[in-house]
Amino acid sequence: MRSLIDIQELSPEEIDRLIAVADDIIENPGKYAHKCEGKKLATLFFEPSTRTRLSFEAAMYDLGGHVLGFSEAQSSSSAKGESVADTVRTVSYYADIIAMRHPKEGAPMVAAMNCDIPIINAGDGGHNHPTQTLTDLLTIKREKGRFDNLTIGFCGDLKFGRTVHSLIGAMSRYKNVRMVLISPDELKIPDYVKQTVLDEKGIEYTETNSLDEAMSGLDILYMTRVQRERFFNEQDYIRLKDSYVLTPEKLKTAKSDLAIMHPLPRVNEISVAVDKDSRACYFKQVKNGKFIRMALIMMLLGVE
Amino acid sequence: MIIGQIKNGIVLDHITAGKGMILYNFLGLDKLECQVALIKNAESVKMGRKDIIKIDKVIDINFDALGYLDPGVTVNIIKDGKLAKRESTDTPEKIVNVIKCKNPRCITTVEQELPHIFVLKDKERRIYRCLYCESRAK
Image (cartoon, rainbow over all chains, first blue to last red; front, side, top):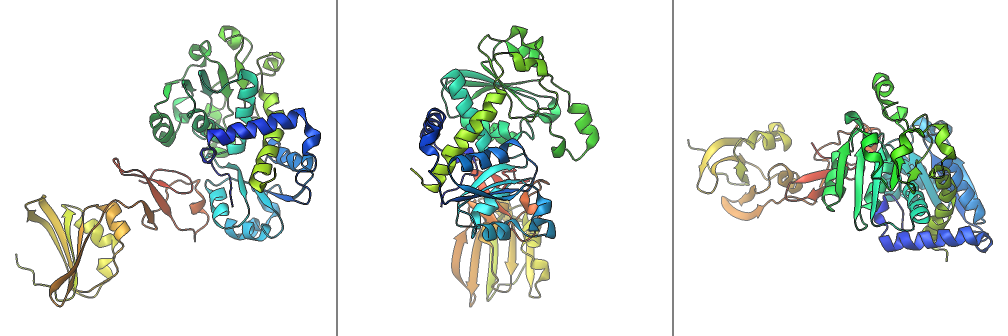
């Protein structure tokens, strides 16, 4: 039974196919309205979420399926100390596929090892978030028309930013992709991402503290939030939370066809004034998220 | 220095000099009631200096753990005073419950019964990563 824990489990060809299906869903939604009739998706969210959980649920409803689950750990038996393995084993008797978010890294992998239905990792701590990456890839394809020959700037919390780690992994498989990693020293990209992805695949990358210096060379700017929930020390969070704030002023040196992306939610790292800029793509990402999740659910359930 | 021959037991040979005590502790040899000899800095043609451990009893040896801690150790099984079997350890592809993940965000920190599994990601540099969270073994 196939699951999706890490974006690297999908080949570039499979990603192309998912994007093609998502494009077709956007053009012909009626064609897909009954594809998952009689199927149930369980959304097991041990950590709060708006977009990811609702987009999974909307995706399943738009495929004609049903949804069950919980949206916080406190409303499940994990609050009583139940293990991830026991929880998913139980849920697997009631559902056909599970989307799981968990604050602990590796929890969806444990789930996949312990049940017989597909598990989709909907975010595990600061580790991976493959469906956000699929969302990002669909957005890049629709905005830029390609995955190769791009310079991508990742800005903000690159240490705990799971969407960043997953997207770097996915984009590193395409030709002539350059990456600019913009972060304070305390939130630099983890060594394991550098060693196992960037160095191993020979990706050209630079690390810098300055968004201003990097701006003019970027085709895509991927902003991220400094996540309070990843810090053990509130003081560190307060010190780092406003490291980068994107404003119309800062975009003056940017390319005219720059794509500004953000996995959302944002706090104040992108000024609301930027929303009016035609280069802002973050709400398009939100919209795309549902369509690519529809394509993924169909693929993992083996629905043609 | 003379240390008597073993009749039935195990000799761990070609231990990197200085690592004998680490293996001694890891294998829990301090808990055995039979004779155990740890020889440090023995002369070796191949290695210059090496450590050797002699155990006067046949016990279960975790080859993966040995291979992780010190690849190249030779395990000699002695039966009736003769060498019955000789095996060399190598860097294992996977180690289970040999070391623990130190990442406070890893699922293994809250689920006590999960096996701590590390997978070899870079054989040349002997880099292992947690199967669950991908943190590097320290």
